Image (cartoon, rainbow, N blue to C red):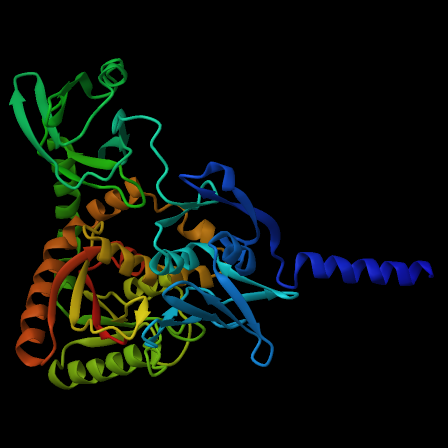
Amino acid sequence: MSIIQKLQLFLTLLLIVVGVKGYAQTTIELTYANEPARTTRIKAMQEGKIAYASVNELATGFLLLSKRVAETRQLELQAKEYNICLTPGNPFLSITDSKRSRSLVQLPFGIEQRGAELFAPVESFVDVIDDIIPEEVSYDRTKQRIVVGKLSLPTTYDISKVSFAQKSNGYLLRIFSKKRINDYESWLKEVEDGTWLYITLPETKADLQALNSQKPDGIVKEFLAFQSPTSLQLTFKLNTKVRNTELMQAEGSNDLLVAIHTPVEEELKAAKLEAVLERTRNRWKLDCIVIDAGHGGKDPGTIGVKKTKEKDVTLAIALTLGKLIEQNLNDVKVVYTRKSDEFIELYRRGQIANAAGGKLFISIHCNSTPRKPKPANGFEIYLLRPGKTESAVQIASRENEVVKLESDYQQRYQELTEEQFILVTLAQSAYVKYSELFAEILQGEMRRMLPVKNNGVKQAGFYVLVGASMPNVLIETGYLS
């Protein structure tokens, strides 16, 4: 064999190994919480932040029977009560139960084929497996580990650390928690030389030695933690007056965040706002409405049971709404973020709205459930704030997935951490009450005029609303599922 032939053979084998799309080969750990000896490694590959795992090896690890259908290239997995059918290149899974009832589940990314093996996006595929086998199944993205059953916690303490930091437009307290705390309350007591901040967390245990050994820092003069049989109280002596506080869940973790507003901060903000209002008083007339049709182009959005694409529905609604505004409000200009089937990045939508001098931003979307068909129906209206309910967080997460279709999305969106998200919403405080007022009016009119279920006004962290410096709402007009 000549040198050239050997080189050609080497390059061919190299392409087979790394795949045609530049995936990096890796492995993912599969652990049984109650049977550590069964721990094994699953073949996987990585593209950016998306991990894919071998479906055949997952089936073996979950004790599922598998059968490849040669005619259709599909792979069938058999559990006790369910059958799952996967198709290469297709994000839809067909699930049939013991009563022969069939439904579709849409994954955020399609099934990939490498040689004779199929690979599925781990995080979303594990959620499907969790629904069809008796054991609880979860995926830890940071540790790249799939866990069957519940791992025992190494300690009984829920809280062992707090941190306090000054931000550009406020102070932020983080309470690090190993469990999700849904019930909490705080209150303030002003004294001559500062303010006492009290936070009570029912049914929560803390490492008092670790907490009380933390040294006060910054505006914190004293810090004490008290444990009772039924609750934990955290007490902070602050060396400044406090106007108010806002206590909320941190997105993506079990931690609690406390945003602290001081009189100095509020007075400076009011002075700056007054100067802006003085220069732009004539511009506050409602003379420009920006209508944002969600998704578009290579991003179809959610896909309905009858293959209806969200991007087509939102565009039709947006164009119809724009015509109605133009016909009934002569002094109002209508600006569209898109008027055709094209892909517009989320950050560009906010730029379009700001450049047009928009006074109101309306983003139109359609809702869906992960498994189709489902009887869920109705409209709901969202404001830009951290999500309070699991369903709101999931809807925002699904809508935000579109950023992965943008080039350099990691650099563009990586700075939106939990703390900075809260400070972003504080920076938009000038528009919050107008967003709330419009959402209330919109909900009342839609409830009165439409024969559709009213699911209320909610809040969640939608990227598309972050960049729009004006009153804004996002509407989920109905369920395609």
